[in-house]
Length: 81
Image (cartoon, rainbow, N blue to C red; front, side, top):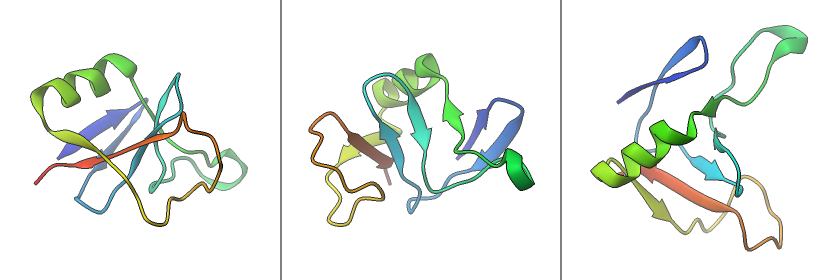
């Protein structure tokens, strides 16, 4: 599936992880930009909610999350197959 994050377009697979921290959806397995301007791409909230409603991405529990915190407000999503 292709998704647009800002000016960049990313090809998502079932291995990619989207993290929701309560305010934004971040594509934590990809990087955008070059050099010092590298950052984690952010998915528009309306686009992410639309993908969830269509059933294209599903919430998952990861055994080894990319960001290990004790915060219960981090949710992870993956592409549904």
